Amino acid sequence: MWRPFDIRPLTYLTFWLNELMNGRDPIGYHAVNVLLHAVAVLLLWAAMRLLISERAAWIAAAIFAVHPLQAEPVNYIFARSTTLATLLCLAALFSWARGRRWWAVVWFGVALLAKEECVAFPVLLLLIELWRSRKSSGGRSVLKSALAPILTMFGLALAAGVRVLVATSQIAGSGAGANAGISWKSYGLAQGTVILRYLRMLVLPWGFTVDPDIAAPSASLGLLAWAAVTLLVILAAALTWRGREAALWFLGGLILLLPSSSILPAADLAADRRLYLPLIGFAAAAGLLLERLRPAVAVAVVAVLAILSVARTETWRTEESLWQDAASKAPLKVRPKIQLARAVEPERGIAILQEAQALAPRDPRVSSEQGRLYLALGRPDQALMAFGRTLALEPRSADAYNNRGAALFALNQKQAARQDFERALAIDPCQFDARLNLQRLGGKIPPGQGCRYSKEQSKALGEK
Image (cartoon, rainbow, N blue to C red; front, top):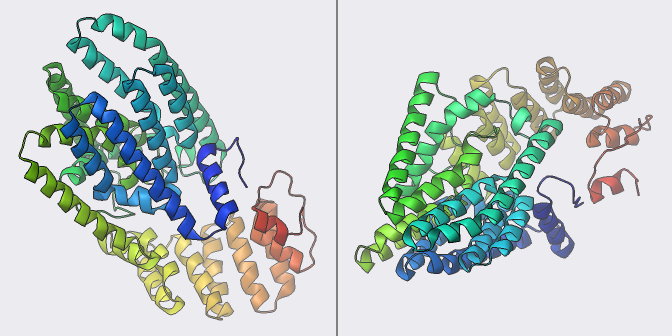
């Protein structure tokens, strides 16, 4: 169910509309993502034609369209927030380039409702205006007239940032901010190396994965990486000051990247989809550099990127191929193995989870997934042992109690199962599976005021 006051309400509105039109069929969701990307490419081309040379604009739009970094945000349905926010920022950029600045403010405000990571976009507009003021005889008056809408955008960005910080601190399992599972210091130290990895992938597009194996570095290595990033920013700023237009757009790309790579901690230290918005600047910079070469060079670059993008999209074709790729590129990481175990047949999944358990014997996610697979295989006794290990590692987990209750129920130990479902609801009164299981056993269901369930879940619980 769509709720207008959720985080990223515009994105969830599009998911809700998708569900109304064709239910949970993934084809409709993928079609919308592809359509959003196509519109974003057209808007980028239209905006760039007004801001840089036409030839460079064509090259920039082509790179933005086919760079393999774009495969993840387009193919990953839940990454629609990134695609939608970028499209709306491009609408703002197009409006700004046409002199319709307050329309740009409106588009940017709507973009913040899709995803808050676009908060640095007004800085890009400020850079563009500073560049124009240096190139124009009446530059100061033009810059002065642009300040009011830019400051309004900064105010909107600040409000959105504060709202997200508050929301992520209150939503358990949000995977961001206070619930990211990583300290601000560790996240910040890691992002220097992450940004350098992103920049390498822009120029040398290989090593893509849905779950990169990146650990928080030591303080010395983290600071060294940030020193390199800072040096790049200073160099780009110096070249911009000397009139290098490509440097201006490269600097803009770095600025667009910073909110997701420095300010708000996230459970994922790196994610390829975070380059979708910054690629506006990086693609423009590449277009300006490649237009100086023979057209055949630009065509060859775009063709190679397109081939790599198709290959990357093939990896996203099935869950098994996606997580097999991630597990092979991060052999010492547990999460890709857990996801791969979910995507394959249960017997093979058990073998994969044994590898994960050898890597992380005290990770409750591994034993929990083992229990789920044992239940699927009709081996509730082994499932009970696995869920018991999970509870020993996570004694306050409502999910773990519910899972153990399911194993007990499969063993026909209904009284013990009922007690576990009740324990799960004592910890989390909104735990859907525990409520449903207890209801089926005829147990007393505790009140669930404020619980949010999907239409299907509410129907299963007999709620209106």
